[in-house]
Image (cartoon, rainbow, N blue to C red; front, side):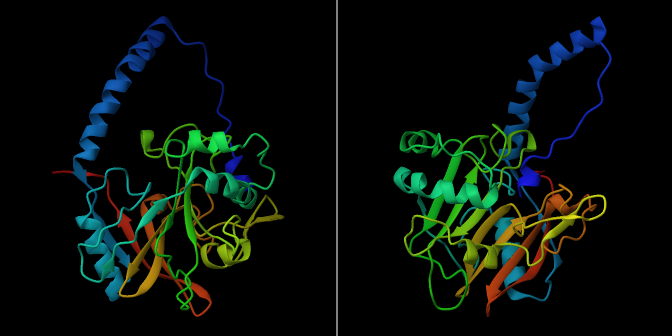
Length: 290
């Protein structure tokens, strides 16, 4: 994961721009905010359309497809899939925002799981109060959810953060801003409720095999199934979903690393009988005008 967060592309050095190029660039900076606001208004007034890629014979997949296509998204679907119980079979889950004191306790274990070398010495209760609801969105579910589908409910937390210092990503841009994707990940808490249960979290939400990389495939890294997670309940069973990324790490099996459509692929998983398996995949289109 640290390799993902620290990856940077090296761009070729551009020649000195001409006066005409500088003029066009400056005009562009003036017009881009207006263009962005206009496109944002269109996106918020539009629906997203999903189609099933895998799982056409699955009841939950067909129902989830209907739910997604009936959902009015306030943000891009890769940022979050909001609660929606309008389709029969779904139970709306109750999200409870994390209190600053809980976020203060939990962030070090969240950060150390994703970025082992991250510096958290500046993290404080005051920082938690300031960042929650702005650069950090974090919540639990009440009542608790049985994400392992074994009859034992656990405290499940979802955390989305987008700042270099206190988020789980290395950007100051919020999710959806200029198509920016901010990681939203699920964590199972331990009995103390003050730390992440690393073993349980990885067992449910992380890939079964490490991703291999390097010129001679000499390196490996553990990764979550995806970085844009959500949770839902259907007919008494709990599922989680995630969008993939075009980041070179591929899907939950570390495959399709060069698939250009992967970023628009939403995969649904269930953890039961001690194992996580994929149930279906859906493709998301760009917004369509109402």
